[in-house]
Amino acid sequence: MKRAYIETYGCQMNISDSELMHGILAEQGYTPADKPEDADVILVNTCAIRDHAEQRVIGRVGQLQQIRRDNPDVVIGVTGCMAQRMGESLLGKAGGVDMVMGPDAYRQLPDKLAEVVTRRGPAAVKLAPATQAATIAARGLTVLGFDPHENYEGVTAKRISSVSAWVPIQRGCNYRCTYCIVPYVRGDEKNRDSQAILDEVRALAADGVPEVTLLGQTVNSYEHGGWNVPRLLREVARVPGIRRVRFTSPHPNDFTRELVEVMAAEPTVCKQLHLPVQAGHDRTLKRMLRRYTVAEYMEKIEWVREAMPGIALSTDIIVGFPGETDEEYQATLDLVRAVRFDDAFLYKYSERDGTPATRLPRDQFVPDEVGQARLAGLIAVHRRIQAEMYQAEVGRTVEVLVEKEGRRGGVQGRTESNKVVTFEAPAELIGYFVDVTLVSTTGATFTGELIPALAAA
Ligand code: 5AD
Ligand code: SF4
Image (cartoon, rainbow, N blue to C red; front, side, top):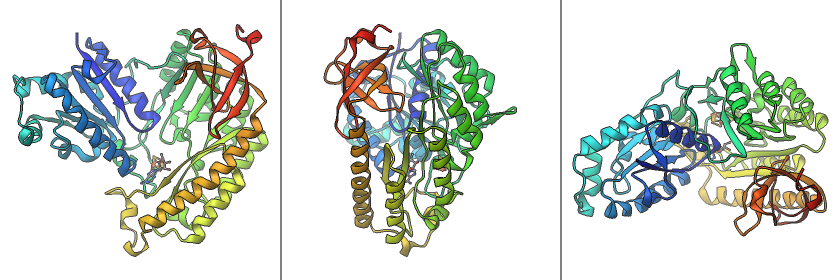
């Protein structure tokens, strides 16, 4: 019996891919290991979206090399977006990698892992540190490239949570936002068959999973055999047993009134929306090739708030994009002040080789200190707003789906609006909906108090 440990970096799509990999490996008799020291195979499933994400992985793979000392037969693989981006060059990095595999090749995992072992022969030799990376690289295996038909149909994911499930409905991306590496490491958009998705959701519901999140890089551009996202979302929302449905991340450009109507009409669709805006000035949006204007984005926010008053909104923003003037940056702050997001993921632009933005005039690139200062300024503006909004919710009683044990005791769950709440309650409540009074907030999460009379509901 072989044991596999998969460590995941990056977005929900990667978490979902790791669950697929565990599923593929399970079919060949692998079981998940709890920690890397216990594993025969260690896979680091990586993100390439920013340089920082890649540096962390290099550091981590370097650390994992220590495991070879006690277990020279261990296989260390790097999968995912960074694997696809760096390819063979990754084999000799961070002390040596045995296998590099891109996101479309996971079906080959068991075969390729076996091949790695055969190729390197008896590995039980202690290598001198100086030659280790080169020796490993020379025997290493690279499995890259796109498969336009690979949707992992028929693979049963081995899911981490029995409470909330990621359901990928789309892979890849057809947009070409000029800062973004995703299309080059995940390929063009491919959408899954709607019936396969619905079957998967029905199976999850039958297993007692009450919450699903539909996943795609631009999830609302989904289109397959006459099905679009509004139709799919409506059907998923109506699967008996499913009590909460979310989807992420939509692109503003594909965000339609029809989708708003379904969100508003279906009680199980959570009144929560993550709608990445990226910037608050039309000139920046144009250089980013986002294909919408600030006015168009704001109009969509209005549709949503009109149809669903109180809906929780979140976004992604990049500051310091090449050519961003102080005026453009101020416009982003204005947008954040105008919308008042419940949550925001805020980033400083990170240059990615091969993306169109790298070809913008060099003299327009924003100096790092300026980018850093802008990010700090944006975080401060958003945090103040977020703290105000969270404070206003203290005292309310809300329904929480209990997801897991809390880090400091008790349990942790989420509200319909996707807010994290921790509170004292027995772990037996995991998987249940309970009513919780929000008693305090850190500004980004809540502490609550369980209402015992309703706990059994
Ligand atoms: N630099 C900084 N942030 C980026 N993102 C994507 N590419 C880059 C980049 N090159 C951000 C976007 C996206 C989120 C997932 O990551 O805001 O929505
Ligand atoms: Fe990247 Fe733009 Fe595609 Fe999102 S829509 S994955 S930001 S290219």
